[in-house]
Image: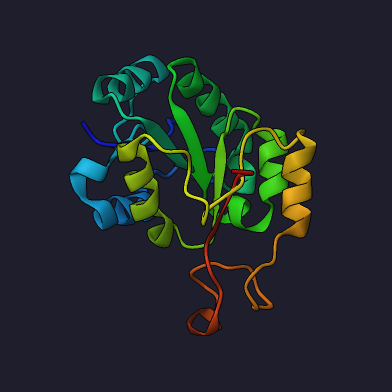
Length: 189
C-alpha cells in the first residue's frame, strides 16, 4: 500500500484546454519518483479515461493515507469536488501546484475540503510528508498550512510567516532558486 496517491482527476486536462487534449501528469510522476512506489503512486484518471466512480474505487482500493493533487486557477472547482470525495473516504488531502504556490489562502478558501497546501517545490516536501504519514504524525512543522482558512489561527499564522528572500514565487521556474527560494506547506501545527 502506498502512503499517498497522487491523483489527476477525470477531466483535469479539459478543464483548461480548448482542444480537449489529454497529457500525462508529469509533475505528479516526478513527485512519485522521489519517494518510490511505497511512498506514492500516480492515478491518472484523465489519461486512463476513468469515470468518477471507477477513479474513486481505484484510489480506495490502493488504501492510501492521503491523496495529493495539483491545482491551477482553472481547476479549483474540480480539485474541491475530488477533495470532498476523498475526505468522505477518510483520506487526508494535500494540494500543490501553481495556484497553491501563488495563492494558498485563496486555494483553502475556495477548496474547504483540502487539508494542507504545498507551496513551491513538491520534491522537497514529499519525503517529509511520506515519513509523517508512515509514522502517523501530523504534517511536518517545516511544511505547514492547513485546515480551514476560515480559522483565525490560520490567517494569523500566514500573516506572521517569514518567506524565503526571493522576489518571485517559490517555484521550479524561479531563476534565483539556488540562492534561497524554498518550498512551504501550509498548516497551523
